Length: 116
Image (cartoon, rainbow, N blue to C red; front, side):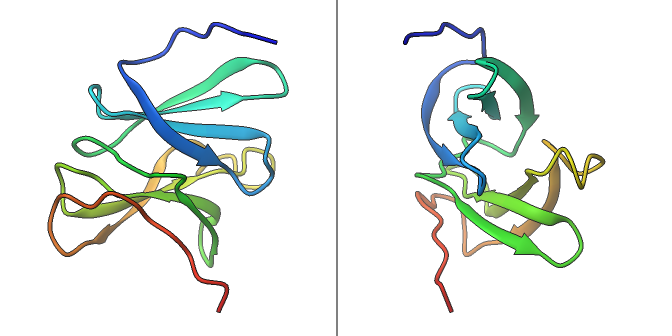
């Protein structure tokens, strides 16, 4: 099945949220992350981020305050942005940058988590 969704320029790379329902993909020419609801086949949100988000597949983890989040680094900013990913149980945080973590300088390509 192929679905066309209007979004921001230019969709580059991304990954799934922890439920595998939503696909978050960097629109790095627009400094946004597009959130695609794969159940409905529609754009759920466009999240404003710092300059040139570059998540690779991104990283999912449970934040103690914001609940489930997805993280992306940026090519043009020295932060890691955390985006809330739980519209059912954390609707105020869903599809927003809920925190920015200081990074070691701009130019980061990927973010990963470790099971421990």
